[in-house]
Image (cartoon, rainbow, N blue to C red; front, side, top):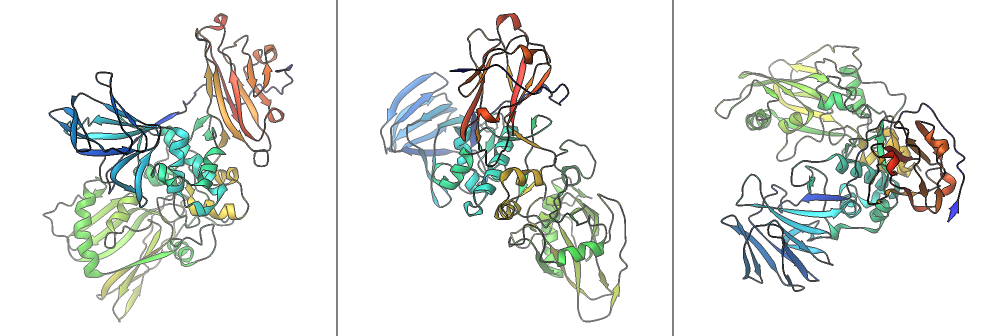
Length: 564
């Protein structure tokens, strides 16, 4: 081992909050049904190319394993689990949860993902539903890296290339670190969380993206960000506050601010700006997306019939005022206009005027679902509205100009027919909620030679790429505290170890790969330290390991992270 005296660059005043997020080494994924409509099951069948071990966790009883390639069926009756082997009852009245494990992937018979039988690494937990005890959850408990292997190629086409896939992987790693949708599992396998298709969806290039970003997160003020992402940007992304907080500035997610593909592009402030912007099919990073620009057209009767249904459906969200119940007769559609928009022109409040009443609709997703064509909702809420008139005289409506920088009022319709309205056309761009990282944008930035740090920093304002902060304590078992991460000097030119020692711990030996740092007196005199560790790193996996604090420092802590 190489023993080194510390020669470091000390900073006395860099920001280093004491909050430390915990890395999820294991992810619990709720597996949904074939059509992703629910995550509660009546029965299920499992199979593996190796033996399946079965444990009844309620009794801590390990059941005789099932031979390779035999079908193991699970059902629930009278609050107990029954297990069948090749359709013959083998074990009954098990209290559960039931845990299945194998040295080979476990398949769920009759469940397909991406056109192939669903298979999963890790363990399968079968647990009674907390809402309906006659049904059960199927939970795949899997390590974080293998979970991401099943997410990245399903959230982004592998044809988008390595750097875009790396950006997607880090966004997905951040997402699951913040996720906890159910007391029994962290995420589900559908678009309600992140699309996770398991073992059969692994691909070499996305595996590489997962491996070459191991341990790396996007942080803001030392915390992992909520890394929202979506398919296609129209050229401008939006802030969290404007889209999800109805324009009430909260600064809950200050890194989710508008980003402009064209640095010279100004916020869209009036109907002329919006029409000009969405009439252009060039500019921006997403022009090769089929949803960069789009239009959807309805005849009047078709849209009235759609709204009769969708106004009732979306009233359940409490985002339509007044609410519409199924007994009301919506009729006489006259006008649709935008009331509030974001800097990208996204409509966040819409007004529908009809003989039956005037209805206000809030939130971009509600608006998209309200104006669906057949079974397809609008690609985004970034659009302007044209009224389609039969041949005849039209009266031009004067545009309103409001200079508010974020949310503004606007009458969207450019022409108002006198008595000859026959339909509406919605002309817009983008696909998805429009907050955070655009996946097509990441693809095209990577084609321009941008590496994943530049891609992420374009879409997430003010972030740093780093390992999660790790907190070091005294423990009597001698357990060390480790951060493991991938380092590539061609992408991350420098790496720094940040140590927060606000508690004034007197001694905390640590190790960077094979280099040991035992004399920490210089560091212990400072509350915050920044140390350039680039020369101690290699291309590939690296580790920083801190020994537990000694008994003299019991009750104190230090915190460390590596930043690139």
